[in-house]
Image 1 (cartoon, rainbow, N blue to C red):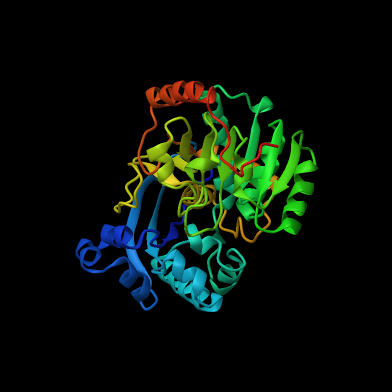
Image 2 (image 1 turned 90 degrees about the vertical axis):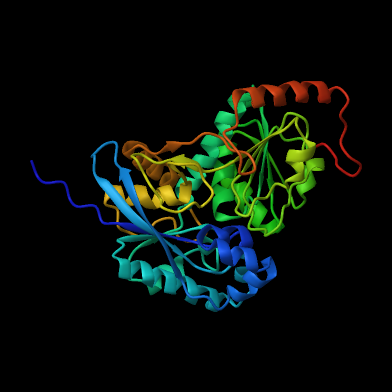
Length: 378
Protein backbone atom coordinates (compact mmCIF):
# COMPACT_ATOMS: atom_id res chain seq x y z
CA UNK A 1 0.00 0.00 0.00
CA UNK A 2 1.26 3.53 -0.75
CA UNK A 3 2.50 5.46 2.24
CA UNK A 4 0.14 8.02 3.71
CA UNK A 5 1.48 11.49 2.92
CA UNK A 6 2.95 13.49 5.76
CA UNK A 7 0.59 16.06 7.23
CA UNK A 8 2.03 19.56 7.17
CA UNK A 9 1.39 21.67 10.28
CA UNK A 10 -0.99 24.61 10.43
CA UNK A 11 -1.03 28.00 12.13
CA UNK A 12 -3.91 30.06 13.39
CA UNK A 13 -3.98 33.80 14.07
CA UNK A 14 -5.73 34.97 17.22
CA UNK A 15 -6.03 38.45 18.68
CA UNK A 16 -7.30 40.06 21.91
CA UNK A 17 -11.08 40.48 22.08
CA UNK A 18 -11.34 41.54 25.74
CA UNK A 19 -8.05 43.49 25.98
CA UNK A 20 -7.19 43.10 29.68
CA UNK A 21 -8.52 39.57 30.05
CA UNK A 22 -6.93 38.23 26.87
CA UNK A 23 -3.55 39.90 27.44
CA UNK A 24 -3.57 38.36 30.94
CA UNK A 25 -3.83 34.88 29.41
CA UNK A 26 -0.30 35.26 28.04
CA UNK A 27 1.21 37.86 30.42
CA UNK A 28 -0.70 38.00 33.75
CA UNK A 29 1.51 40.79 35.10
CA UNK A 30 0.93 42.99 32.04
CA UNK A 31 -2.83 42.48 32.20
CA UNK A 32 -2.76 43.67 35.80
CA UNK A 33 -0.83 46.89 35.32
CA UNK A 34 -2.32 48.13 32.03
CA UNK A 35 -5.82 49.54 31.73
CA UNK A 36 -8.15 48.43 28.95
CA UNK A 37 -7.57 51.75 27.17
CA UNK A 38 -3.80 51.36 27.46
CA UNK A 39 -3.89 47.84 26.02
CA UNK A 40 -6.01 49.07 23.13
CA UNK A 41 -3.61 51.97 22.50
CA UNK A 42 -0.33 50.04 22.81
CA UNK A 43 -1.64 47.20 20.64
CA UNK A 44 -1.03 49.49 17.66
CA UNK A 45 2.72 49.24 18.23
CA UNK A 46 3.15 45.62 19.31
CA UNK A 47 4.65 43.19 16.77
CA UNK A 48 3.02 39.80 16.08
CA UNK A 49 3.47 37.41 18.99
CA UNK A 50 4.25 33.68 19.07
CA UNK A 51 1.74 32.18 21.52
CA UNK A 52 2.06 28.39 21.66
CA UNK A 53 2.51 25.09 19.88
CA UNK A 54 -0.58 22.91 19.43
CA UNK A 55 -0.13 19.13 19.66
CA UNK A 56 -2.18 15.93 19.82
CA UNK A 57 -4.74 16.43 17.05
CA UNK A 58 -5.39 12.99 15.54
CA UNK A 59 -7.55 12.11 12.54
CA UNK A 60 -10.28 9.56 13.29
CA UNK A 61 -10.05 8.19 9.74
CA UNK A 62 -6.30 8.07 9.06
CA UNK A 63 -4.78 8.12 12.54
CA UNK A 64 -2.38 10.85 11.44
CA UNK A 65 -1.35 13.43 13.99
CA UNK A 66 -1.29 17.15 13.32
CA UNK A 67 0.52 19.93 15.09
CA UNK A 68 0.27 23.66 14.72
CA UNK A 69 0.81 27.05 16.33
CA UNK A 70 -1.13 30.00 17.67
CA UNK A 71 0.25 33.33 16.50
CA UNK A 72 -1.25 36.58 17.76
CA UNK A 73 -1.99 39.74 15.85
CA UNK A 74 -1.97 42.27 18.72
CA UNK A 75 -4.74 44.53 17.40
CA UNK A 76 -8.00 44.68 19.35
CA UNK A 77 -11.33 44.80 17.45
CA UNK A 78 -11.58 48.53 18.14
CA UNK A 79 -8.17 49.09 16.57
CA UNK A 80 -9.04 47.04 13.49
CA UNK A 81 -12.25 49.02 13.01
CA UNK A 82 -10.61 52.43 13.33
CA UNK A 83 -7.14 52.11 11.77
CA UNK A 84 -6.63 52.39 7.99
CA UNK A 85 -7.33 48.99 6.46
CA UNK A 86 -3.88 48.72 4.85
CA UNK A 87 -2.24 49.18 8.24
CA UNK A 88 -4.37 46.34 9.63
CA UNK A 89 -3.54 44.17 6.61
CA UNK A 90 0.17 44.75 7.19
CA UNK A 91 -0.01 43.61 10.79
CA UNK A 92 -1.97 40.46 9.91
CA UNK A 93 0.42 39.71 7.02
CA UNK A 94 3.35 40.07 9.43
CA UNK A 95 1.69 37.46 11.67
CA UNK A 96 1.21 35.26 8.61
CA UNK A 97 4.91 35.53 7.77
CA UNK A 98 5.73 34.45 11.31
CA UNK A 99 3.55 31.38 10.63
CA UNK A 100 5.44 30.73 7.40
CA UNK A 101 8.73 30.92 9.31
CA UNK A 102 7.47 28.32 11.78
CA UNK A 103 6.81 25.93 8.90
CA UNK A 104 3.02 26.08 8.65
CA UNK A 105 1.47 24.66 5.50
CA UNK A 106 -1.82 26.52 5.90
CA UNK A 107 -2.97 29.55 7.92
CA UNK A 108 -6.32 30.23 9.57
CA UNK A 109 -7.59 33.74 10.33
CA UNK A 110 -9.41 34.12 13.63
CA UNK A 111 -12.12 36.55 14.76
CA UNK A 112 -11.71 40.07 13.29
CA UNK A 113 -8.65 39.14 11.23
CA UNK A 114 -11.04 37.14 9.01
CA UNK A 115 -13.46 40.00 8.29
CA UNK A 116 -11.15 42.98 7.76
CA UNK A 117 -11.41 44.48 4.29
CA UNK A 118 -11.95 41.79 1.66
CA UNK A 119 -12.15 38.88 4.14
CA UNK A 120 -8.75 37.32 3.65
CA UNK A 121 -8.12 37.78 -0.09
CA UNK A 122 -5.46 40.50 0.22
CA UNK A 123 -3.77 38.63 3.06
CA UNK A 124 -3.68 35.37 1.08
CA UNK A 125 -2.22 37.17 -1.95
CA UNK A 126 0.63 38.51 0.20
CA UNK A 127 1.64 35.15 1.70
CA UNK A 128 3.32 32.03 0.35
CA UNK A 129 1.02 29.62 2.21
CA UNK A 130 -2.73 29.15 1.67
CA UNK A 131 -5.22 30.91 3.92
CA UNK A 132 -8.73 30.26 5.19
CA UNK A 133 -11.09 32.34 7.29
CA UNK A 134 -12.81 29.21 8.59
CA UNK A 135 -16.20 30.69 7.69
CA UNK A 136 -17.53 27.60 5.91
CA UNK A 137 -17.27 25.31 8.93
CA UNK A 138 -18.43 28.13 11.21
CA UNK A 139 -21.63 28.27 9.16
CA UNK A 140 -22.11 24.51 9.36
CA UNK A 141 -21.60 24.39 13.12
CA UNK A 142 -23.87 27.39 13.71
CA UNK A 143 -26.78 25.84 11.82
CA UNK A 144 -26.18 22.48 13.50
CA UNK A 145 -26.26 24.23 16.88
CA UNK A 146 -29.57 25.95 16.05
CA UNK A 147 -31.11 22.62 15.03
CA UNK A 148 -29.92 20.87 18.17
CA UNK A 149 -31.01 23.68 20.49
CA UNK A 150 -34.43 23.84 18.81
CA UNK A 151 -34.90 20.12 19.42
CA UNK A 152 -33.95 20.46 23.09
CA UNK A 153 -36.38 23.38 23.50
CA UNK A 154 -39.19 21.42 21.78
CA UNK A 155 -39.28 23.83 18.83
CA UNK A 156 -40.15 22.21 15.51
CA UNK A 157 -37.86 23.58 12.79
CA UNK A 158 -40.53 23.19 10.12
CA UNK A 159 -42.96 25.37 12.10
CA UNK A 160 -40.50 27.85 13.58
CA UNK A 161 -40.08 31.56 13.02
CA UNK A 162 -36.38 32.35 12.74
CA UNK A 163 -34.25 35.46 12.36
CA UNK A 164 -30.66 36.03 11.26
CA UNK A 165 -29.00 39.20 12.59
CA UNK A 166 -26.10 40.18 10.37
CA UNK A 167 -27.71 38.42 7.42
CA UNK A 168 -25.73 40.34 4.80
CA UNK A 169 -22.31 39.18 6.01
CA UNK A 170 -20.40 36.21 4.60
CA UNK A 171 -21.47 33.90 7.44
CA UNK A 172 -24.95 35.33 8.03
CA UNK A 173 -25.94 35.13 4.36
CA UNK A 174 -25.27 31.41 4.02
CA UNK A 175 -26.73 30.62 7.46
CA UNK A 176 -29.88 32.41 6.27
CA UNK A 177 -29.96 30.42 3.03
CA UNK A 178 -29.65 27.14 4.94
CA UNK A 179 -32.28 28.06 7.51
CA UNK A 180 -34.65 29.17 4.74
CA UNK A 181 -34.69 25.53 3.60
CA UNK A 182 -35.95 24.36 6.99
CA UNK A 183 -38.05 26.94 8.86
CA UNK A 184 -41.54 28.33 8.25
CA UNK A 185 -40.68 32.03 8.45
CA UNK A 186 -37.34 33.84 8.29
CA UNK A 187 -36.52 37.47 9.02
CA UNK A 188 -33.27 38.85 7.61
CA UNK A 189 -31.77 41.72 9.59
CA UNK A 190 -28.95 43.94 8.40
CA UNK A 191 -27.96 47.57 8.03
CA UNK A 192 -28.47 48.08 4.27
CA UNK A 193 -31.75 47.41 2.51
CA UNK A 194 -30.12 46.80 -0.87
CA UNK A 195 -27.85 44.10 0.56
CA UNK A 196 -30.79 42.53 2.39
CA UNK A 197 -32.74 42.33 -0.86
CA UNK A 198 -29.85 40.42 -2.46
CA UNK A 199 -29.73 37.91 0.40
CA UNK A 200 -33.49 37.51 0.22
CA UNK A 201 -33.19 36.50 -3.44
CA UNK A 202 -30.61 33.86 -2.52
CA UNK A 203 -32.90 32.53 0.23
CA UNK A 204 -35.76 32.23 -2.24
CA UNK A 205 -33.71 29.86 -4.40
CA UNK A 206 -34.71 26.48 -3.02
CA UNK A 207 -36.01 27.86 0.27
CA UNK A 208 -39.40 27.10 1.80
CA UNK A 209 -39.65 29.89 4.36
CA UNK A 210 -41.79 32.99 4.13
CA UNK A 211 -39.28 35.84 4.11
CA UNK A 212 -39.09 39.42 5.25
CA UNK A 213 -36.28 41.89 5.87
CA UNK A 214 -35.58 44.59 8.42
CA UNK A 215 -32.87 47.08 9.37
CA UNK A 216 -33.93 47.03 13.04
CA UNK A 217 -33.02 44.46 15.70
CA UNK A 218 -36.48 44.91 17.26
CA UNK A 219 -37.76 42.73 14.43
CA UNK A 220 -36.41 39.59 16.10
CA UNK A 221 -39.02 39.79 18.85
CA UNK A 222 -41.38 37.23 17.33
CA UNK A 223 -38.59 34.77 16.43
CA UNK A 224 -38.40 31.35 18.05
CA UNK A 225 -34.85 30.94 16.77
CA UNK A 226 -32.28 33.74 16.42
CA UNK A 227 -28.85 33.31 14.85
CA UNK A 228 -26.71 36.40 15.29
CA UNK A 229 -23.35 37.04 13.62
CA UNK A 230 -22.59 40.74 13.22
CA UNK A 231 -19.22 42.49 13.19
CA UNK A 232 -20.31 44.94 15.88
CA UNK A 233 -17.85 45.71 18.66
CA UNK A 234 -20.61 46.04 21.30
CA UNK A 235 -23.73 44.04 22.11
CA UNK A 236 -26.69 44.50 19.76
CA UNK A 237 -29.27 42.17 21.35
CA UNK A 238 -30.72 43.20 24.70
CA UNK A 239 -33.16 41.50 27.07
CA UNK A 240 -36.11 43.47 25.65
CA UNK A 241 -35.59 42.08 22.16
CA UNK A 242 -36.44 38.46 23.00
CA UNK A 243 -39.71 36.70 23.63
CA UNK A 244 -40.07 33.94 26.23
CA UNK A 245 -38.81 30.60 24.96
CA UNK A 246 -36.54 32.03 22.28
CA UNK A 247 -33.29 30.31 21.35
CA UNK A 248 -30.36 32.57 20.46
CA UNK A 249 -27.22 31.19 18.83
CA UNK A 250 -24.49 33.84 19.13
CA UNK A 251 -21.73 33.23 16.59
CA UNK A 252 -20.11 36.68 16.81
CA UNK A 253 -16.83 37.59 18.49
CA UNK A 254 -17.15 39.86 20.44
CA UNK A 255 -20.58 38.54 21.47
CA UNK A 256 -23.70 40.13 20.02
CA UNK A 257 -25.90 39.28 23.01
CA UNK A 258 -25.69 41.55 26.04
CA UNK A 259 -24.71 39.95 29.34
CA UNK A 260 -27.85 41.56 30.77
CA UNK A 261 -29.80 38.82 29.00
CA UNK A 262 -28.17 36.26 31.29
CA UNK A 263 -29.02 38.35 34.33
CA UNK A 264 -32.60 39.28 33.41
CA UNK A 265 -33.98 36.53 31.19
CA UNK A 266 -34.10 33.01 32.59
CA UNK A 267 -36.81 32.23 30.04
CA UNK A 268 -34.58 32.30 26.94
CA UNK A 269 -31.76 29.99 25.89
CA UNK A 270 -28.58 31.70 24.69
CA UNK A 271 -25.82 29.49 23.32
CA UNK A 272 -22.48 30.15 21.72
CA UNK A 273 -22.18 29.06 18.12
CA UNK A 274 -19.24 27.19 16.71
CA UNK A 275 -17.63 25.29 19.60
CA UNK A 276 -16.15 22.10 18.14
CA UNK A 277 -14.71 18.99 19.76
CA UNK A 278 -11.30 18.25 18.26
CA UNK A 279 -10.30 14.60 17.65
CA UNK A 280 -7.37 13.26 19.61
CA UNK A 281 -5.68 14.32 22.87
CA UNK A 282 -5.19 17.88 21.69
CA UNK A 283 -3.20 20.27 23.87
CA UNK A 284 -3.26 23.93 22.84
CA UNK A 285 -0.66 24.88 25.49
CA UNK A 286 -2.59 28.13 25.86
CA UNK A 287 -5.87 29.03 27.53
CA UNK A 288 -7.90 30.93 24.94
CA UNK A 289 -11.07 30.61 27.01
CA UNK A 290 -12.43 27.24 25.85
CA UNK A 291 -12.63 23.96 27.78
CA UNK A 292 -10.09 21.19 27.03
CA UNK A 293 -10.34 19.61 23.54
CA UNK A 294 -12.68 22.34 22.31
CA UNK A 295 -11.94 24.84 19.54
CA UNK A 296 -13.73 27.46 17.51
CA UNK A 297 -15.15 26.17 14.23
CA UNK A 298 -12.81 28.48 12.29
CA UNK A 299 -9.84 26.85 14.01
CA UNK A 300 -11.29 23.40 13.32
CA UNK A 301 -11.67 24.19 9.60
CA UNK A 302 -7.96 25.00 9.38
CA UNK A 303 -7.09 21.74 11.16
CA UNK A 304 -9.46 19.66 9.02
CA UNK A 305 -8.06 21.06 5.77
CA UNK A 306 -4.53 20.19 6.92
CA UNK A 307 -5.54 16.63 7.84
CA UNK A 308 -7.23 16.28 4.45
CA UNK A 309 -4.11 17.51 2.67
CA UNK A 310 -6.06 20.43 1.21
CA UNK A 311 -3.31 23.03 1.26
CA UNK A 312 -5.21 25.63 -0.73
CA UNK A 313 -7.05 28.89 -0.10
CA UNK A 314 -10.50 28.19 1.32
CA UNK A 315 -13.41 30.27 2.63
CA UNK A 316 -11.99 33.57 1.39
CA UNK A 317 -14.00 36.65 0.45
CA UNK A 318 -17.56 37.66 1.13
CA UNK A 319 -19.21 34.93 -0.97
CA UNK A 320 -19.29 31.46 0.60
CA UNK A 321 -21.34 28.79 -1.18
CA UNK A 322 -23.61 26.20 0.37
CA UNK A 323 -21.67 23.56 -1.59
CA UNK A 324 -18.45 24.64 0.14
CA UNK A 325 -20.17 24.39 3.53
CA UNK A 326 -21.33 20.86 2.73
CA UNK A 327 -17.84 19.90 1.56
CA UNK A 328 -16.01 21.08 4.68
CA UNK A 329 -18.73 19.53 6.84
CA UNK A 330 -18.01 16.13 5.31
CA UNK A 331 -14.22 16.60 5.54
CA UNK A 332 -14.43 17.56 9.22
CA UNK A 333 -16.85 14.74 10.04
CA UNK A 334 -14.58 12.17 8.40
CA UNK A 335 -11.60 13.26 10.50
CA UNK A 336 -13.60 13.20 13.73
CA UNK A 337 -14.55 16.84 14.38
CA UNK A 338 -18.03 17.32 15.80
CA UNK A 339 -20.24 19.91 17.43
CA UNK A 340 -19.24 20.40 21.05
CA UNK A 341 -21.56 20.84 23.98
CA UNK A 342 -23.40 24.13 24.46
CA UNK A 343 -21.94 27.02 26.43
CA UNK A 344 -23.66 30.24 27.37
CA UNK A 345 -21.83 33.53 28.05
CA UNK A 346 -18.47 31.72 28.31
CA UNK A 347 -19.90 29.33 30.90
CA UNK A 348 -20.83 25.74 30.38
CA UNK A 349 -21.80 23.15 29.69
CA UNK A 350 -25.48 24.08 29.38
CA UNK A 351 -27.14 21.21 31.23
CA UNK A 352 -30.41 19.42 30.55
CA UNK A 353 -31.62 20.79 33.89
CA UNK A 354 -30.91 24.35 32.77
CA UNK A 355 -32.80 23.85 29.51
CA UNK A 356 -35.74 22.34 31.39
CA UNK A 357 -35.76 25.39 33.67
CA UNK A 358 -35.77 27.73 30.66
CA UNK A 359 -38.71 25.85 29.14
CA UNK A 360 -40.61 26.02 32.44
CA UNK A 361 -40.00 29.76 32.90
CA UNK A 362 -40.91 30.45 29.27
CA UNK A 363 -44.22 28.59 29.61
CA UNK A 364 -45.07 30.63 32.73
CA UNK A 365 -44.04 33.98 31.25
CA UNK A 366 -45.83 33.57 27.92
CA UNK A 367 -49.16 33.87 29.70
CA UNK A 368 -48.46 37.43 30.82
CA UNK A 369 -45.88 38.65 28.32
CA UNK A 370 -46.43 41.38 25.78
CA UNK A 371 -43.98 43.21 23.48
CA UNK A 372 -42.28 46.30 24.90
CA UNK A 373 -43.52 49.63 23.64
CA UNK A 374 -42.36 50.25 20.10
CA UNK A 375 -41.78 46.57 19.28
CA UNK A 376 -44.28 45.22 16.83
CA UNK A 377 -45.12 41.66 15.89
CA UNK A 378 -45.30 40.87 12.18
